[in-house]
Length: 448
Ligand SMILES: Cc1cc2nc3c(=O)[nH]c(=O)nc-3n(C[C@H](O)[C@H](O)[C@H](O)COP(=O)(O)OP(=O)(O)OC[C@H]3O[C@@H](n4cnc5c(N)ncnc54)[C@H](O)[C@@H]3O)c2cc1C
Image (cartoon, rainbow, N blue to C red):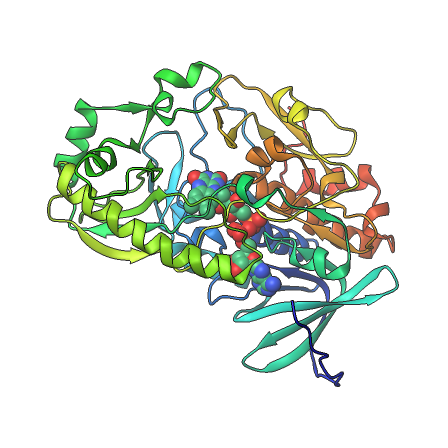
């Protein structure tokens, strides 16, 4: 690629803080709330106009669709997000589990409220574009926004960008699966004008199960109901209305009383790298084309959808996987499939895997502990990573990418960052016993 030299220049300091959280998905939201509740000054920085990450940008509603009677679940900010949303009438019952489906538009207000209550300084419409380094220690970031190029100085930085942008800019090692092996990207969409009663009675007569996904299960999922749709797209393919080689099938979620199917997760495009601007562009454009094919197939071949029309697309392409840091510890398939236990555990996550050709639901009470080491990057000090870009192999990613697990790493990162300031320690040197104590005080479940 051709390169040019950018001229050096002086830039204003937009803010100084104790803890700066970059990215406001489930990981960043939890991190900022946890840090602020430890009494340190906290900034939550987000490139778009609302907090929530994939929840509010891609409209992902199902924060705990894994939860069944036997699930040993996390405790902490993730559950608080679900319950607070319910209290604020921003949820409906999720169709396949004992959980709430988020109303992702109203969740924007839920997030604003929580951020305000915790006295966090919110900064929206602002993108982190460079790391400020002093030797191997991060001192802040450089931002770009309508206010221009500015700096934010921070004692600790938490990278919750999903793509490990800050770790990458700071020079911490990371890895990314080859493009064709990365989990697919999705343009989610919603339809209006659905005859809810007619659709739900059709589903009752023709229920799908997780077996229909055609992926690895543990067997117990094969007879469990899944809000999964494949038949309409198959029929459209047979009729030549959708290209025959296209993988198109997926799930529905909330269907409101007014007839809005708010989160249709049906398009899945592989071979797109979320750190490549051309791939992001192609993903959006192709995704919308495929979403329209899917919408037309639903109208034509699904009872209840006959009079449906497009309500909205997700406001940004939904990303499942990109860079992952190489951490002090890298979580493994063995850990997530065999109830891993760790001395530096900062939370638990039920044995729930979804992605990479696997769906395993935590119906039996099995869980693994989440180690602090997966959030600590190599080579860069005072930076922690939370959310889907924590360290681990591909199969462990199908657990750690889950929104509830992102809140577990987020909450721990927030508390650890605050604690390291109070202890005058580097993030990598945080006293684990004190961290576990502080997390327990915040209501986190570390062991059962
Ligand atoms: C279509 C789809 C369906 C899914 N379904 C489910 C599901 O049912 N249940 C589930 O648990 N998970 C699901 N997932 C996965 C889950 O949504 C993500 O793994 C999770 O949201 C990751 O959380 P995060 O906080 O790490 O990152 P994200 O939610 O991706 O948030 C990252 C945030 O950082 C911001 N950001 C990024 N870079 C910068 C920067 N340089 N400067 C400033 N801000 C920045 C982004 O705008 C974004 O707000 C799904 C994902 C997709 C795409």
